[in-house]
Length: 431
Image (cartoon, rainbow, N blue to C red; front, side, top):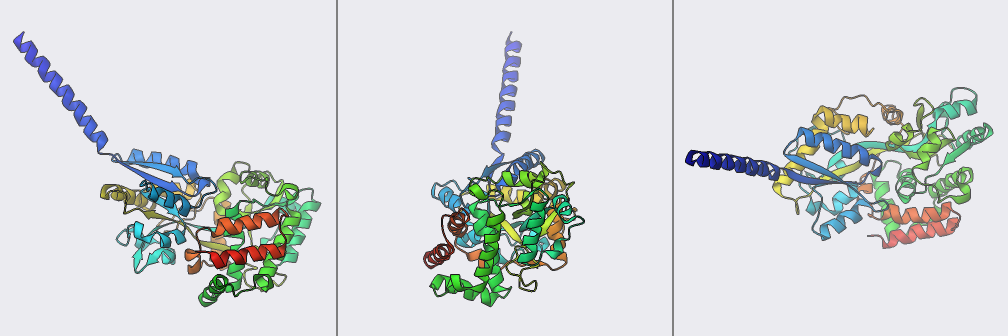
């Protein structure tokens, strides 16, 4: 009996040791969070987190979506104030500038040397790199080539759309073929951050000094926006879009999800959006992946700046919190970023799953989707408008405020003079 009791005690001790050992292993897992401000790839990032977690037993990544209609800066400010900052945060370049003191310098990370030329410029402050370039993206009018081929009675050549008259002719041909010309997604971020930015870019024409003068004059209230010929040209094109918008009768009723459906099914010829939209378009694709981009033209002179170019830029950056996450969590966050760049499964997440153009030269995967290929082709032949440093320091609420003014104009609730005045008033009070 005595030996039996001793044996039983030994077994109990062994079982307890196993349990405590398992608990210790479980407690050793670093729990980190990743704030995602690209809602269209939330599902892809959640799947990526599962793969990463399976491959990295000591780390668990949770993907937190940025609420719809909220800017990353707004969400980050709230999270910092509540003491619950995410380990990693996908933000805009300007947010990195505004929150630099919260973030960890990443100069020593291997991927810095592999980042594409210029991709780190807007997030390098006082010689320190403060964020990871998540992707290269571009935007303009996405066209459904099958619809356009039918409308033109032959192969549609996107390089012919270099004037407003040519764009209107394309719209007319699509309508004559029995389809709708285009769909305008009325989200404030699409209107304010993307569509309206072509106006700023066209004024500056790639000259940094011109951009500095532009934004300085807007802030000082010395620029008469309504009298500016580039703004007038931009607005004339926007008026054309309003006229041919398939949702003209109720312009603000269209959700983001309706755009890829209408374009993919071939109900419309054009949709103003970026290459990030391919996963949604693919769900409805009836054109055998035949899609591409044409520019937001601003005049009837093909040689005017931007009339042959789509906008391409380093978009969205991932910053690492250094104020509310532990050193162990920071190390885990760095591991996730390195996984995206250097591991096959991480690269697959960026290129094949999320359909992004990677901002790293070591990633040699072919761009599989047609929109990504179109942007890469525009970059290769020099028909892109480059990003500018000033966009990194634009006010955090620019897209939401200016976008709201554009929504009113799109829906017919404001005239041109009111629109110009609202935008000017915004700049003179912007922080």
